[in-house]
Length: 343
Image 1 (cartoon, rainbow, N blue to C red):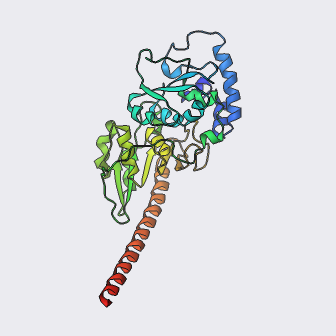
Image 2: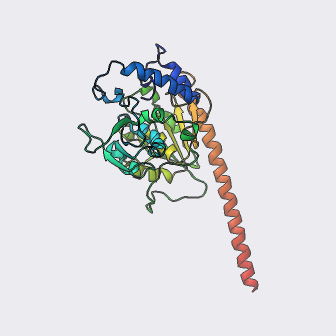
Image 3: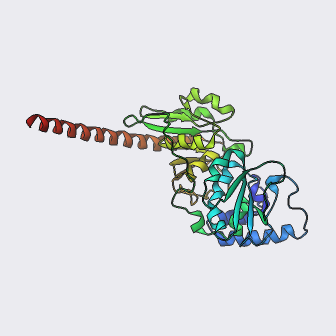
């Protein structure tokens, strides 16, 4: 983790690390890195092997110089974390002699195409089979390079997919295609939404599609959603790109959609993670994302009502635009036919 180790925890009751969390949420990155410097000095004063203990708690970078060196970037957190922080590889590569990313196997094809990555190799439990001068965990990179708003607030997609001609849907009139994710992994189950709540999002001009993996995927038919989920991350991205909108909880799909520049609505629980701002609908991390927030812990109903209203407005606007296009197209065709008859 790039700030105090406790910031990775979901237990905020003691308030530890809150100053770093507040700085990150406020976009005060210089202050966040100063706090990280203090934390780093305190953490590594005793020395010891940096590769011991649970991987997700390991602090790999100890302030070593990265400029002109061959850097191994270790991806020890979740898939979403890797997708979010891969944005910093161009800035790292600008100072390093080379950048190798040791990433989760499901992300290998995606990360291999990312700017600033010379080589991507699959993460495993052994020793990395590549030579390097210095290593760093991917979530420590922004601290190491002293990332600023320009590094974070990217106004364009920073990941790309190979083009595909395979289509799972045909665009029909003003129908709005919406992809859904409602369940998460074991970490912080407060992020989950009862699937029954999402049934309210279906409508006359709305087609629901399930991107949900795991046990929750079996519930897709109960809310009238067609299952288009897949374990292939690149294929998932290609299918998401064919949708009009992704609505999801705070999980990997949210980061994938944001990194690809897709429209995504992210539903956040009341004590959401540090990477999301404390208020507002927008995020510096993803310009195409809109945030919907839980006000009372555990109460998702008002959130879904807000999403339902916003989606209804969006689908009505799309249907109206489609009707206008059809009318204009039909009028043009009729005019052309009449002119042809006159000739």
